[in-house]
Every structure is written in C-alpha cells, then in structure tokens.
Image (tube, rainbow, N blue to C red; front, side, top):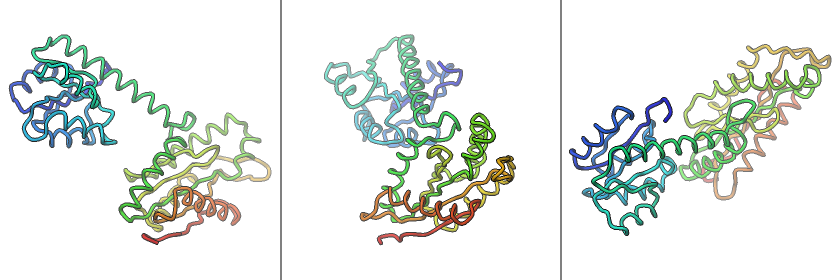
Length: 308
C-alpha cells in the first residue's frame, strides 16, 4: 500500500466484532468506527473520507444492504469500495451484496491474513482509480483543473443554484497580448508564464465551493456558486493585483510592459429558460468589453434574477 495508512471505516453494531477487526487492522490502518447505518453514512461522507468500508449486513434499523445502496447513490461516497463482512453465507446473500455495489463479500469466520490481503488489494485499486481520475481532470501544463473538470462543475453548480434559487458567477480571464509574448519570448517562456499565472490566480480563489480552471490556451475561468456581483468583483480585483505583483516582463516592441490580464465577469440566476452556455456567453461578452476598453481591467454585469 501507499506509505499513508489507509482509512478504514468499520460498520458493525457488535462491539466484539469492532474490537476484533480494529485490533487486526490498526497496526497498518487508520480505523474509524460506526455502530449503525445513519452514523456510517455521515462518517463516509465526512471531509476525511474512508479509503474502504467494512460493512456488516445484520444491523438494527438500517441494514447493511440499505447502507450500501445509499453509499452508491451519493456522489460523495459512490467510489468508496465496500466489503461486506457477515455470517450470512448463502450464495443469494453474496450475489445481492455484489449486485448493489460491494466489491467483495467475506463470510465469518474469516482468515485474518486473507482479509488483510483483500483490503490491501481494494485500497490499491481505489488509489489507482483516484490517480487516473485526477489526471483526467487536471491540466497537464498548469496543474489546475482542466476544461473537462470545469464543464462538469458548471453542470452541477447550475442544477444546485437553480434548485436553491441562488446566483452563479463566472469570471473569464484572458492573458493580454499573449500571442505577442510567445512570438517574442518563445513558447517555452510562454509555458512558464502560464504556469506562474495559474499558481497566483488559483490562490485568490479561497471559498471551498469555487473552482479555478484552465479554459483553453491562455484563458482561465473561475466558477463561483452563490456569489453576488460585489463578491465576484472582489476576487477579480485580487487576481489583477496578484498578476501585477508578479511583474513578468513583456518585451515585445508593441507592448513593452508587464504581463496583465483582462477579466469578463457575469452573474446569473439559473432558471428553466436558461442554460449553462448562457453564463459562458455573457462572461465572454464582458471579457470582449474589457479587451475593447483597453485591457488590464474587469468588465462585469449582473444578468439575471432568481425565478426571472
């Protein structure tokens, strides 16, 4: 396994079973415990999520099958592997457990060595999947979220803010005169410039629910659910100031300045007559206005109201 100890959530209403599994796994794992279905779901969805869940079937109230179904229905927990550990050894029981999403089914009494090997295997597979998932959503050059990640986040944020009757803000960021920068300084220097900009711009996105991503080429975006015009503009001004502090020299004869950015900002309240593309179009219009107005500035607009 990784050098980091895997976090294992043990779900069982019998203290003796918890003690047995805890003693077996604690030397190699960080063990978290839940004694009923409701607390298991809460701990599984916590900020520090488990790498794997060992789940008993027979529990009072919500049984293990119900817990597993709910885990697999949630975006937060569906990718956490579940191993059923139970005295119910009938073939139909095992088939049901695997059908509803468990990765393994271990009947009691079990071999401690075999159980540890199975846990190790499933944790390693999960970490490998997480690694590949991260690669698929991170921009290779700048190491911030990529366009695919942004598109998925926009769809999710759109549905959430529409359901909650909230606003959704989008900042589109373009590096001024970037083609001229590449032509004069070279593409390798251009890549370094983009990486430095992505680093400082991303640091100005401080709320947990906001997303900073590379949109494409020299364009970046910042998606801000439940943000108003004033709050989004504040972030935009911080971004402009952070880029100015970098003082990256732009020595093209037609520019002769430091690298700057232009920002287009739109705030919209999603409703059934609009779609996510509308927000991108509005932010792009504001970006065009900022460019036309002289660059190195913000153009912002509020373009909708809840239920409008």
